[in-house]
Length: 346
Image 1: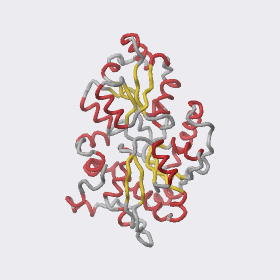
Image 2: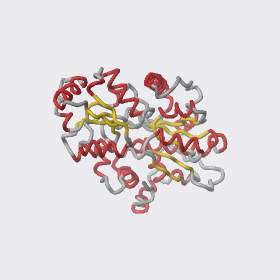
Image 3: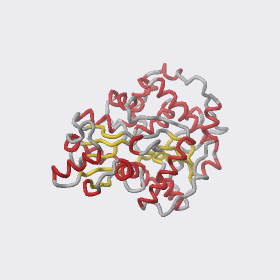
Image 4: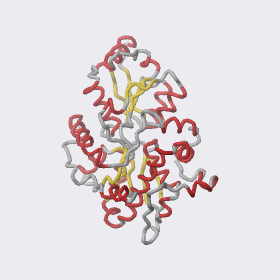
């Protein structure tokens, strides 16, 4: 993924005048000499930080981003541990694992909630008739195929994996004999669903719009809120070193994200080409990004305080699954003051 494949701003100078009313851009006392090292996974939920960068708000604050993409949040934890990242933009659940390992990070903003949804491939979707409970869908599939339905998701400890297992065992009450969970990366999950290599999987936008657009027989079977109420999704976390040494840089990032979410909500048509240029990789057109932005699987939200309770609930469930040895106190994980300052300045 590259954030310089093309620039909407250079093609449309009028956009430069489109600052979001009411938001100020915090400016660093001195421009940062090196790019901030940002890790993210290429899903729609990371769009706010991309929009903030492409709109020039971070540059105005004296910041530039050096972005590395990852297949999942747990994979990114290794980079945090090695000191090669300043900013983490991915699911909140792996940060509990990180804290258990002594990695000091702070969640300073959310970007979305309830983003992980379940899609059924054609072979499974034909049993998902209206009014048929999910557990019965899986049972009917196994009775017909003679094998459990293969469901793809990211590794144990990730938000997608936790969400899928919570839905299967706690909400749907599925019989474990009827399903098999297959762990794979985000891109691999999308391709596996499209190719029929699995019967279903956890996807996030824009993958949901991509697969359902390419094959209408693939169906959105469960929304994020059904699977895990107020499911905490992608967050922005920073290292303790960055927070202590460069709080103005952290503030600029959070303010940019708040501005970006406001802009996406007011004018998705405007931001769709910006997001497509960064996330599309030449494979996703702007029309698909537009659909993804207004999809029922998309819920942008910046307030980190709103996901604290759900994060604690998810962490408790991770302990039950064995992804965590024990619950880690969340008192020191969330740092809302940067968000509070961002909205106070509106």
